[in-house]
Amino acid sequence: MSSSFGTLFRISTWGESHGPGVGVVVDGCPPRIPLTEADLQHELDRRRPGQSKIVTPRKEDDKAEILSGVLDGQTLGTPIGILVRNTDQRPSAYTEMQQAYRPSHADYTYDAKYGIRAVSGGGRSSARETIGRVAGGAIARKVLQHSLPGYECLAYVKTVRDLTAAVPARLSAEVIESNIVRTCDPAAAEQMIALIEAMRSEGNSIGGVIECVVRGVPAGLGAPVFDKLEADLAKAMMSLPATKGFEIGSGFAGTQMTGLEHNDEFYMDEGRVRTRTNRSGGIQGGISNGEDIVFRVAFKPTATVLREQKTVTNTGEDTTLSARGRHDPCVLPRAVPMIEAMTHLVLADHLLRQRALG
Image 1 (cartoon, one colour):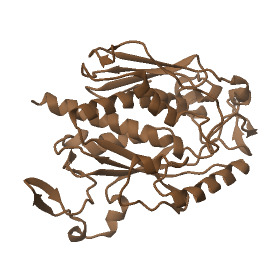
Image 2 (image 1 turned 90 degrees about the vertical axis):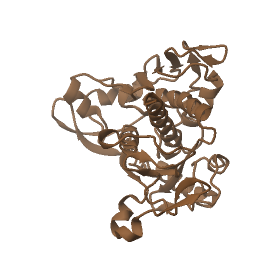
Image 3 (image 1 turned 45 degrees about the horizontal axis):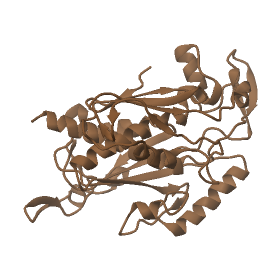
Image 4 (image 1 turned 30 degrees about the vertical axis):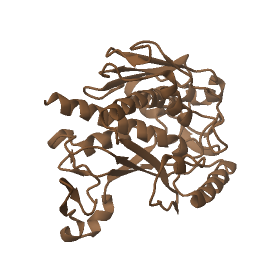
């Protein structure tokens, strides 16, 4: 099972949803990067369960412990080990899943591949695995900010089912974090909250789209052919739980335009090459062009719904299953920091790879 991601800046996550703990080993972080547990905790708090009325009520503090690689608030250039202990495990909520496969979960496919699985909470297929990604992403963010003073990555909920947020001219983290949905439109946020609560009251779930805008990335990151920057971003995003689609720049809407309509014309701006439009989403030929990187990720409705559904057992018998436990009726609010973390990881890796070219 591959649990590592990255080339030069590399993370390896470990742990199961209801085991003693989860964590990550970060390898390739440069030395003398300022880093404290508080840097990690800020991002983990945005991801943790129990933070609002529209997410899972599981009570976890998700306190990060740095075990290695940091001394006196600076990275050493050696592997950074991070541990987050699980404190609110409830394996009893998953006893029925030992035999019955949950619809649209990884239960059947894990059994088909490995012949064994961690039943409680889905084990490695649980979104709890993303704790390691978010912690590693927080370190990658520090690396990027240390090297690129203008670097900023802002993800936000763009849609919840058919509700769409209006993106303000001055997008900021403060606007996004001002509501529990983590959208950029306070008016739409109220409607989204009401819809998510309605789905939860029905024992149902809902999905949507997260958009991400990355500023301050210089031209030149990425590589042609197989290691295109957007290809690595797509792999990173599609490796997250519940993701079902990725598009960058104009995305699928660009197929409705002609070449003349779609092309981003160049012009000079105080000695810098710029584009008048950004339908490329900040990447051309697999390499960043210095404009904002803009992409979107589609998330399916949470697979666990608290209603009876038809399924089969691991012995091939038809049955029904009513899920129990604590689950998000909509993954989007907690997925925002996950999207940002994976973006940091990809860009930090490509920044170090670009430096290696000399």
